[in-house]
Length: 204
Image (tube, rainbow, N blue to C red):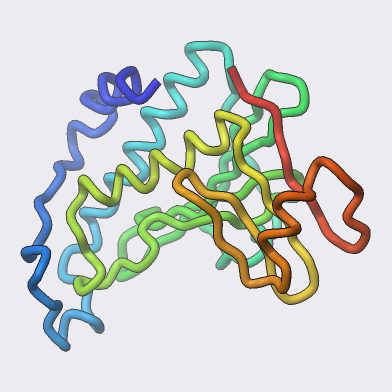
């Protein structure tokens, strides 16, 4: 599917050019880069990439794109400026909510992604927009694609409890709950009282 997204991105991303990594693999960021964002508008490339994903999923009949108004922020996310939700057509698939917000005077250059209803936050793109954390647009878009594909494929498992969560990712898993790894293994196989479990079917 990523090939189709790449082809569509040639259109949706025409006005949001990519950029190379600002430093070599062995070069450390300078101290002043941690507190600045010299070009916040470049992160509009994230919105453009998501538009490509949306178009491909809608064209294939896998999802409907719905604008949401009057919705509270998703759990663990900052208040958005605009919210869209991709509603999958497959029974049992998890909807993907996109909360667009802006920083440094640029609207919608950061996107929070959430699953379920009500949505629970699973990631943000970019994770941090400061110049020190910038690894180039290639890495940024690969990480974004990984998140979207993990949801669309039906492989995402998310467990939320008091004070933390456990979540599978495209390349592994992460958790800050005690016994997070065990909870992920048990999710969907056995009841987990006191936890919210988010598991969905593939969109396609």
